[in-house]
Length: 145
Image 1: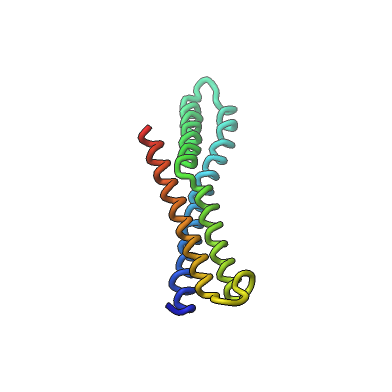
Image 2: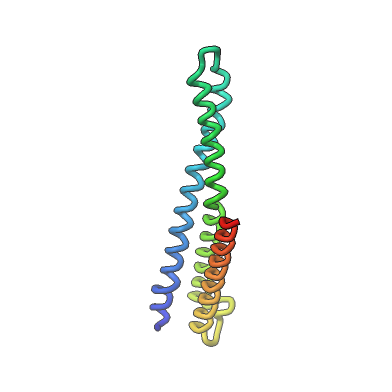
């Protein structure tokens, strides 16, 4: 595999994948969190409007409370914020390695530069995969308990 092939087929593809996953998780996290904030702000307002005949306002306040609890539970379960940060960190790590390699900086100043790049990138992706597998095992064991 040539240097250009490795940079394009492996590193660029991984950067795109991690960046895409980061954006997806960021959008989910922010959408749910904004919904929670809006509902949280509306509840005290609606509560102030409840009078003796305010049955539907009471229902709306109750539903709002349930939606807040559900939203926070979904955020906790799906870990959108944590995933967003981890994927962003991985993308930035790969971008940094690529930049150091292309500018012949840091560990890539001399020697077998391509081999070093491949080793470092493959070690990084292997560690990411191991961390993911450990996470999946932990999550599955938590669900069984």
